[in-house]
Image (cartoon, rainbow, N blue to C red):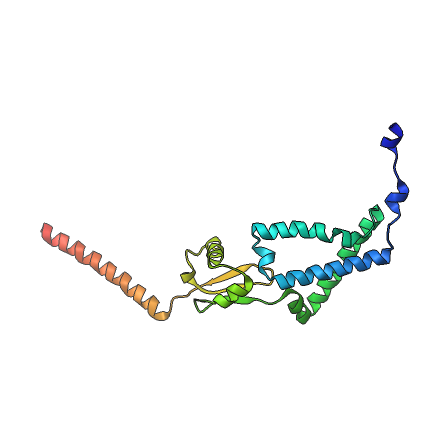
Length: 198
């Protein structure tokens, strides 16, 4: 019994169950399939996860585990798989940094969700974003309603950015006139009160 507790199977720990090359190809293929899957799923999957999306992500890691490691439970096999993923990620990110076309193909581009104050419902549907989700995102950025927004766009990473409507020159003049009229009303009331006292 004591022998079982203190025994270490160095051979099983160090000797991979499959070849290093096999492990590398498995990691590369799973990496590319997941990148493609997230690209097809859309930007929403990256930033605005609902409970269903979270469940899928948890199950996804378990689903691809066996395909990634194969018939291998060794320490060396796990380290090799992790190292290959880090190296692939480093190479792809470096390559995309120098090549904007590849970056656009892999990550996608921004989509305009509100333009000139008008909500583009076709874009919301494409990105699987409801109007209430848009309103919640706007509230988080300090807007009380979508009526205050001139432009909204969703970035490739799933973040939504908003630009407030700027008042036109006529609206600015109108507000200034109202302010001056209000000041005049206050002066007239003050003068009327003063005349009545005299």
